[in-house]
Length: 275
Ligand SMILES: NC(=O)C1=CN([C@@H]2O[C@H](COP(=O)(O)OP(=O)(O)OC[C@H]3O[C@@H](n4cnc5c(N)ncnc54)[C@H](OP(=O)(O)O)[C@@H]3O)[C@@H](O)[C@H]2O)C=CC1
Ligand SMILES: O=C(O)[C@@H]1CCC=N1
Image 1 (cartoon, rainbow, N blue to C red):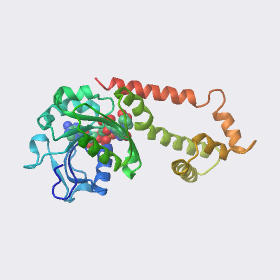
Image 2: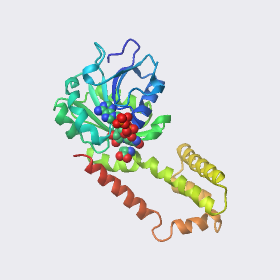
Image 3: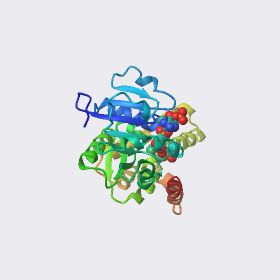
Image 4: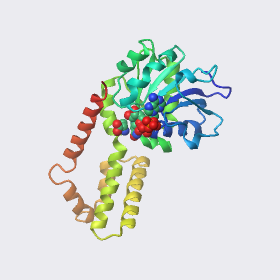
């Protein structure tokens, strides 16, 4: 590992938007990165200006002299990957691993422009990485060494939990469940707040209650050894208020068909983005 003198990894981050930026914040806070060069179309975010570990480059041809990244993190939108990727082929060398977080883009897709010798990890994180509570699933190709797997694991673990899997096809439903999943939870908060308003609560109190309830229930789920179904049952007094609501939410097949259809749609979209 080329450590820039302080024991961490040298990273080239391509795309420092919502997800790449959130992960970079975690890497800097955990000191796992010793040096980071950021290639970002919109320029270096203000929050990184003045950070001695971070510098900006306009592309792979503009890297600081002598800078050889241990990891090239590919964090641009899938739709712009075709245009961005070929320029990075020059960095495909045994000491460098490419870590993609792009939805849909397969390992085979990256091995085209980067060359078949490139070490590639395809991963799918989620935005709770911004507070160290992300969930990432990752798959390496055959060129990724044990040391590179360990380095990518450490980077991903610095922003949350990590699961390594062997079957790359699972990354499409993974993307649908955990990559996109935070949006479903935030939608639930919005819907609970609107429903509270419809029942007579002032808007600000309704939103405060919805946020606190979803974040508190999430933290309870995080800390408790109990299954989600048991935590639900613990709220539900026989013939009480929760049961009255759940009788509505669970009528027929309840929420299940909607969520199953939503996650199937996201899985299909992930597969479409592969091309
Ligand atoms: N947001 C999320 O919850 C998650 C996103 N992902 C994946 O992360 C990737 C990034 O998504 P997200 O962070 O949401 O998107 P953003 O648009 O927020 O970030 C991408 C950034 O890349 C910049 N950019 C565009 N082209 C280039 C280029 N050629 N070189 C360098 N930078 C460039 C964009 O600049 P500009 O805006 O000026 O074009 C933008 O700032 C996607 O592939 C997505 O699938 C994965 C998991 C979760
Ligand atoms: O919506 C998207 O395509 C990205 C991937 C997962 C979350 N956001």
